[in-house]
Amino acid sequence: MKTIEWIMMGAFVGGLVLAFYKLYLFFPKTRLADDDMTPESVELLERIMVECNNSHSHLDEESLFQMMTVHHDFDSKHFWRFNENRLRHLIEHYRLKEPNFRR
Image (cartoon, rainbow, N blue to C red; front, side):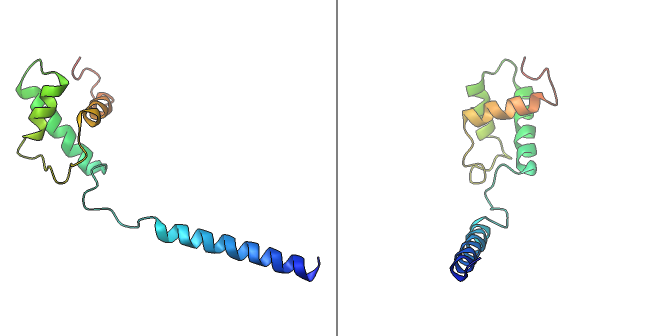
């Protein structure tokens, strides 16, 4: 290989290493305080959902959502992204454990 080819190859490899280092710095290394997708947060939401569902019979999803948001364990600052669509996903996730939930 010629000298110019070695220089170009070195510049390419150096740029690639620099790009990966910048990506490494960009990604978060710690959990955010308001991350509501952690297993602990999902477990808390599931517990609230089951309590609200068991306290009243024949709730539709909108009523269940309303009851969950006023539950004493529900932290609106922590679960600031919680909406009815997230509730539907939570119900489907919980049905993997309890297949007869809300049938």
